[in-house]
Image (tube, rainbow over all chains, first blue to last red):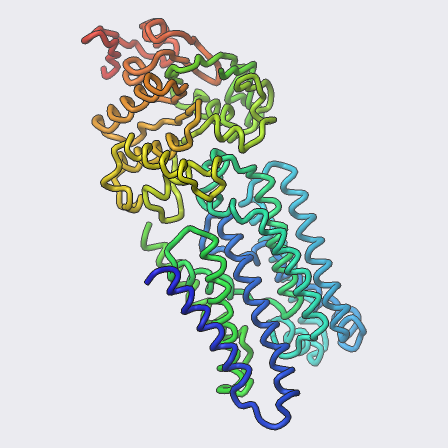
Length: 315
Length: 252
């Protein structure tokens, strides 16, 4: 199959998945239902696309197919913010209940954290692995702090915290969604400036420099883009850990190519199919008895183990 | 012309390249020789801006390397490192096409395609241009990388141990290609070599380094001498003329 046929199939698959999700079982007050479903489907599609794009860029920068951008520690920071708010102000406090405040607070803190981290580390040379190591340490630190606070709070409050630790598309607010889309579109426009460098970056640092890429500047800008995309997606629906790795690697397997023009578009479709299809199954077949991110993390985790074992064998 | 002025690179307190100055002549092959840890590869990486230097300046056609626009420099100077493991799966042709990136920024024109064809032809890779790199032998792979450098069409070509892990036949083949690049196309080639005999037979100039310092530099016949090599390698090396080549016997 050529790339074009595969891409067309993926596009059709995405449309079918979205169609199924929107129109199956549409009874009663259909206008209301459709409107609700529409908001959810947009949230799902946007988050899926954004996470997939961020993961592909991140893996290209690091030249590693089993890393995810959550290594920078943003997911853990988000969990810490949520726990912190409920620990100190209680679940009835405005910043805990009001989604808008919570959204901007989370986004702001995550981006500020990422920028400070990058600023500090890029000043002393540009070692991307050192950055990941520091990110990992911060992530663990944030997680430990969260756990510490979680064991101290009231069990009822803990349930609320726990709810927020998994991504959920069920109660995304429409106005926040549009703000998020706005931020994402601006970021993606900025990304367009750098897309032609992505293919070359995947050859590794010395080849990229040799071929005239201003490596340090380009990598820094791309990392900022990744951080913003991840922050927006996480603040909107919560952390989805393995989605990126899962869909991006499925895309690599399907399209055995290095061309990012193909990869990025394809991974967006794969991501939409995975998320929308998954959500459809959970809604209609499991009657909401579990959340999508639990399933994604399960499937993704298993796939991740498979990847590690596969890599292991090739050595 | 490449001019290196008083360049120093420190790792912690140790200078791996210690106040090195030299001028690399145009259109010739210059070899860097010296024992492990002499700073040959580091110096090459500094000249090609892969590593930042701590002191001194590297001028290429009168312009400081670290200040030059990256895109322009990539049309003038290319570098091939010794470890070239690429994580992506590429065919020979795709790899060589990357050599045109400084000109095309990813969108290949007809001129680019012609250059790619002629580089593949130059390295005699036509029969395997659609094979994946991981299906090739070490020698074929090295030729593919050199084809990419040729496609980049730069005046200066820097190669870091291009003969690493190659057998005699492939080493000779690659050195002959480099010789042709210098003689026919007038390229300036700087190359790090471990085998003194390859340096002796194929290069015009040799720079002998040890402990980050230049021990001696000059035309090949001035360097391939018992006294100089003793100072560089700390070994008594017998030198004999065989078929007009100065061959070093360092095996016993």
